[in-house]
Image (cartoon, rainbow, N blue to C red; front, side, top):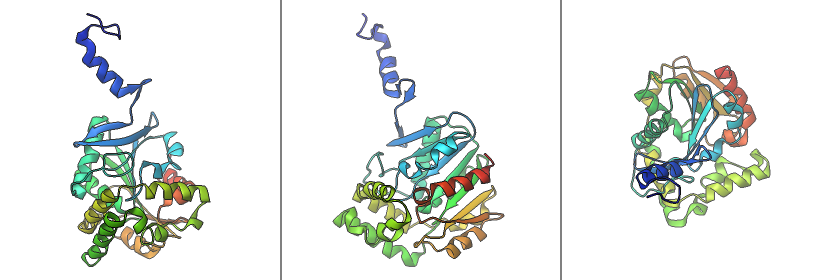
Length: 286
């Protein structure tokens, strides 16, 4: 018997899969990876693969300003991490290892081929470090933007308090402690700021809290000295959260790392995409 698609019933499973995975020859932007639904984007059709890891409170949209410039010469992969953006809103605690398991499952599911150039922002530098430690032969370079590779145990309590406040009062309740300090509106045009703030306030408070609890108990700093691939560390001169000397100190722990500063705030892909893109293109010679 033929169904409404004009093929035999035995082909129904194939048709269903085809419709789920493709729309006009393009994959739908969600995929199951490590038992979580992940929202992702893959831009560019040739060149080596860049993996963009967003900040806590951010999403794949954080990289909008640099992706078009990179996608002309490279394949650019970005995604909303579990609990953020349009990815599944989880409720179970997780570790940095879980987040890297997510990334590796995505790479396998999408059949992305090495070498990989990994760009991280703020706390996602911890993921980059763990990913590189697991996959040294596959990682061609690392870029750390205003990195936070680990949390001193003395600061863990403060991060736990942020998590508890978000869970109790919602994201608006933590704005004075978080976004108001990390992203003053004067660092970019008003439309860019309002877009970022709107996405930030829309975060799931529980997922936000889980991310801060994860960060509070994680310190990947010992892995800095073991990095063997070319590495670029970038500090934002207008970053009020992580001072330039702190980021420079992190760079000095990485053998042969290149250190640069640009006029940017803490979330440099949003506040200064042009300057960041120019530095990335120079680093990779693309």
